[in-house]
Image (tube, rainbow, N blue to C red; front, side, top):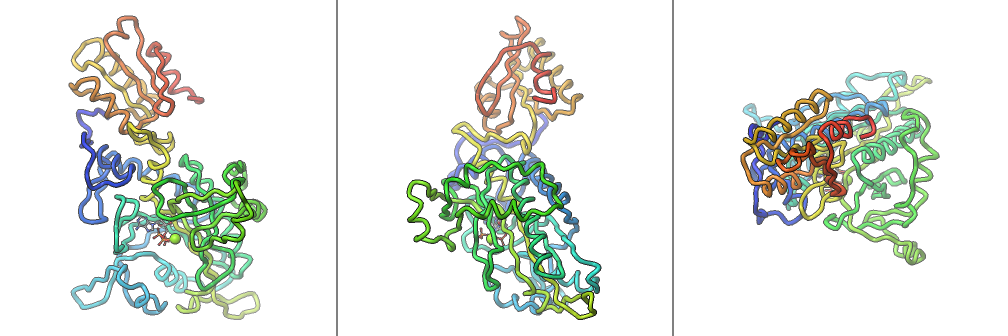
Length: 440
Ligand code: ATP
Ligand code: MG
């Protein structure tokens, strides 16, 4: 992509409305634009990141054995009356009446709808277990939408639902998602910590929130230091295998969200206690037969008895993750994208657009990177170098190649790593080699 053609309306000044760094950088880099409170358009640069995150989430869900479907954003009120949540949900639910005076709503979550789909199609224990997910926009009329897309009213969520015959099956599904989540966040370049969360009326120990630690997190969380240092190889685990021992190890450390913290336990930790602010990027949750009983979703078991299906739900805040990653990965100049989610792999700065040598070098790099399957953004604007450097640092692509008249005199360009800031002069071929070799 050439910057002269790309739609990336950057801002020089810090927008007043942005209180946290991710919101500031997203607006300044032209990633999003507010449409109304808590509702955003995703401009091309932001959209690229969103899609990359979505794809990694999808791959890990598929790998864990979940199947993707797509449910609508608008749901009938009827099923929410069946579950009893229509009245409980309160003002966060956006309620709509259609032209036939039917009560509808913009879905804040999908337990009811998936339970309805499942109960209408499944009769026998032989159809279990199943895990179904979708990645779809949700709407919650939050009292205080803030921090840009971090707490929006409309936001993109991956929500998965598991269906099992009994508690053991439900626990297997839960464990699989637990590990799939850690793998997902690791691939996104994040350290997300699973923390015991409020299980609600069901009780038990199967509710975890995945938190990334950042000063701007909305809630205070605590954990034992050893959990942060724990380095487990999750990538080599069989994604469909038995995860119990892995989950047992991970949950053997103290880690709790604010409502689950235990002052007595924490007092015993001394300096090993970490108290920090956290951003919730995922939540997994076993709720047994809460919805299946209320909505009459049953199967016949082996003996021919009708039993209510055991369920769990598993959410990831896909759009919130864009902000969460920026909170975790930035410096004062801008974003530092992990390679896996960067909107482009490489930024090419043509320091003097219009100069024959610079143009030729930039074009050569651009086309060769493209041929090697790398996504490059070429800054071919007629702008001062300072502006180009600042914009490239702001948008945070992992690598920059700078082609300037002075270097090209002696046949070199500069290769800069955004993360380390290290700059190195080398020939065009050497730079291309470094960026396109399997290790690079
Ligand atoms: P929170 O406690 O932050 O309000 P929640 O517990 O209500 O979130 P869940 O129902 O568990 O949220 O939703 C699953 C995931 O969706 C959350 O872990 C979070 O990452 C994301 N999410 C929830 N609400 C929002 C929102 N208003 N804006 C962006 N992402 C959200
Ligand atoms: Mg939650």
